[in-house]
Length: 337
Image 1 (tube, rainbow, N blue to C red):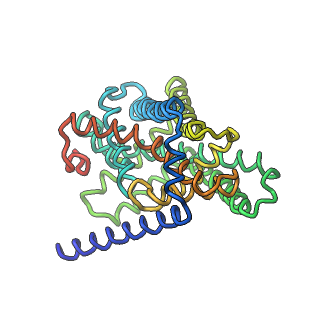
Image 2 (image 1 turned 90 degrees about the vertical axis):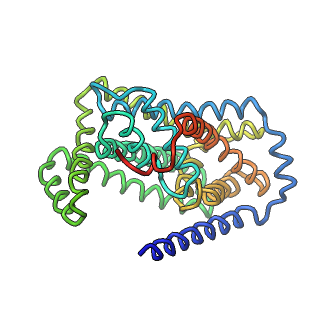
Image 3 (image 1 turned 60 degrees about the vertical axis):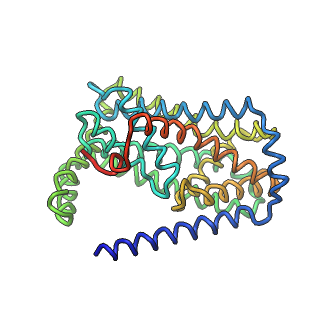
């Protein structure tokens, strides 16, 4: 059994390495690295610093939102929540999985009286909120640019994505409404599914569902709902505007809504299981810049690299500082309390 797990792990690492190398090859194959370096050396440090600060600010908004989702009346301490948020997103930025989804609840549960399964349910609420906003932004961009890019042969993919996004938005809306109207029936169905998992996990399975549904009750709590919505708006203002400051740092000027387009497409690239989205993120960014905004290969490589730096360095540095400061071990982010 141990040998089988070791073999499986080795094969996973080989597959991840192969994917990373493949997408990096696609990203860099036609680039002149000397010219890329020349472009990067011309970066305006002021705009770069603004982009880095904007990205760090997203951590603060994420912390504020998560505290309220966890408990509108008695939210957990600010530092404990910020610590779990920063370290969790740091892990997602360097590992080929969405480590923050599990690491954040685990870290918070070890330092507060918050239950792991309950915190995990709020993470799902965050994911639903963020997906909703991302899809709305993408659909809005596609509608606004429906005729602008009508002659672009690549835009049919965007149109198809927008149509799919509308379908997902409708499904999400019906799902949430269904939870409000038919919660007991959906909970029973959740319990039936829970019988398929080991007995020791069933209580956590139900707590996870209950915590997720409980966060939906925040709609009845005006102050808490306001904080959540404003924090979510702040998060996405940061995540989209950081791209604008990245291209400004490279002395390029793009339409403001280009940030929505690039952010949406690179989010898909980040879903490719490579460490920190390396390769997939960059190639996705390059495709948009070269096919829609007139970037040459070298400029697109420089922009994608700098955008990745802006989007990851503040999170990674903050998370690593806190990780070392608290004397964490790997088991601290993989084991729940």
